[in-house]
Length: 326
Image (cartoon, rainbow, N blue to C red; front, top):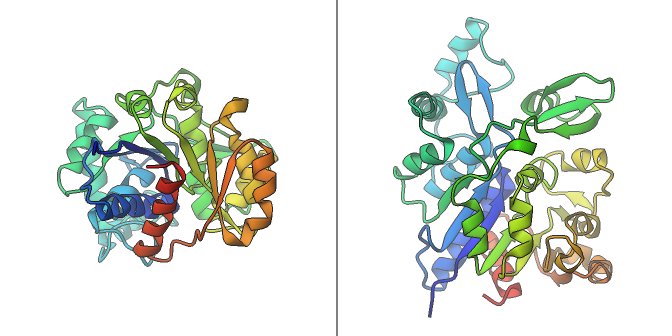
């Protein structure tokens, strides 16, 4: 039996947990995921320069999770990390006092920055970093271009997404989100080919606006999803009318989308109507929305969505694979 080629679009903590589940589900089927079996296209709109180093929060969250070295309590960074360097930076008045960088995490950022300054692309850097651990997946950035997310507030002021998200906890009302330069960006090498050859594309239950949105905004990626022969299955980030984690509801409101499983499905749209989805996994708590999802031309699949631990994440990924007939 040929090994299925699964592509996941992901970002953030929800994305990392789902990717862990996808890897576990493939292993349960007797498939040890390789770069040919499981490819993760990661959001890089969260990236930023801070204290002279390049940070890729979503890339690192997923890499650390697959490596088994992530801090599962805080939800970000490395487990068992210390913060001596971060404290020293604050004593110098450098960096952001509300944006903590662990010492081990800083090692990652320093290595990345050095390689970038040596001329490597983000794709090449991620490939090099991935050699350290047996990840069981190939990680690709959505683009090698810098397209950091900027939040435009109601008063017209602007700030980096990380400041709005981490410092202000999304309490400042956003007017819109921008990724300067994304209109001229290109998909990272391997992204379009991975989607084109996929037996299944999964859209993780990541923030639809600031995690999945930037991926889809890179010219050529949405078109590749529309053209791929494999089914595209999305997983709702909304359970019982509430966001699972973070402040995605504030992001959705800014683009005029209701915080509901059916509304997010409609936001992605059905492939026959020019959208992205063939099927949509929604929680048992949102079963009443299945008819609305079906009415939009998307096949609804009601299943437990809570990813409390890896077995629950694996069960969710299994449901996604089954929905696609893989």
